Image (cartoon, rainbow, N blue to C red; front, top):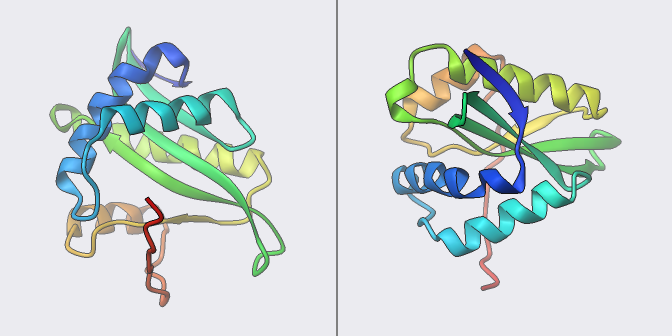
Amino acid sequence: MHTITPATPDDIPQLCALLAILFAQEADFQPDATKQSAALRAIIEHPATGRILLMRDGDNILGMVNLLFTVSTACGGKVAILEDMIVHPSKRDDGLGGALLQAAITLARQEGCLRITLLTDRANDPAIRFYQRHKFKISEMMPLRLSLE
């Protein structure tokens, strides 16, 4: 049976493995378990920063979604950034991603968020269609980044 639960520190190794799959398919990022582990721990240990929800089948983590919280002057309040979302490739097309995303949307509403923003690769048509099916709209804004590392 599949359940959705908050992440705990014990989940970090499995989450790093999922993030390695995600970052291997994204153009802008590279897997780095040390960095991912530190960031996951920071989110899990500081819920005001954000939350990580997991799709579980017993002890196995099948998917994850990561919401980070900030404040938007445009919205006049709290908003969420959907930073990472992945379902293990062997479990895709089973409705798990939709259930996980809906849980994240519910959590964002419970937290008083006024908007959820996410980024996906421009060429990832399946992901774009997935988010559009869940009422996300393509923004007229374009992301720009400055690495400070």
